[in-house]
Image: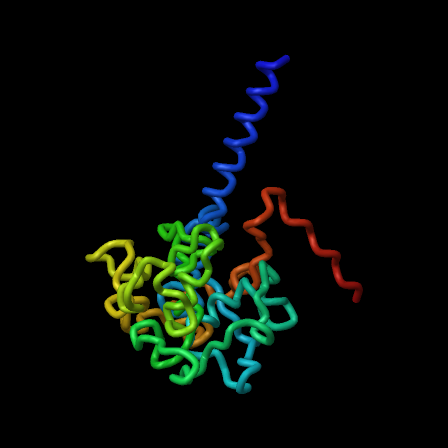
Length: 244
């Protein structure tokens, strides 16, 4: 009986260890590359398969066009706001994006901005190669030392001495965007979070219909509004059909 008890304790500790390790990044690990990108059904540049075409920035009423956020919110926003309802973050109540940061509030390095504005990727590196908690760009001891992340931009508000660094420029920030340099942590002022590449994808719908265009115009609904919840292992429940 005593041996069984010891085995149970060991199994429980392994569960906690494996569970925390798996949770250290996020559910994108199980979604795979095709959860966000599509080699044949891209609806946005850089082969994105998801896009929020309905959401506007509640901070200023502006469109999300030009932000990576429009792709992130294709999944991570409520359906009534153009998302798929998967772990919605609500732009109404979350950290502002799509704006130029106020230097009196935060000293954000230009290389952490997209076209001079805050974006989802300013804080998160969503690729599975990032093993940080919640895909944050800075290690936070599984969220236990969140100030290590916040001081990346709010450097005078944190205790740098407690972090073991002398200056905010010494903070390491993760990125997987430079294929040549690899997926790793870079110095705060040297990290590259976004590759400026040509928009070589022409989203379907802009092509003039003719006999030469394949029938990819009629894409399945899930391409625009994915119903697959990566947090669930079970099959997606079928939605009740609307009565005529």
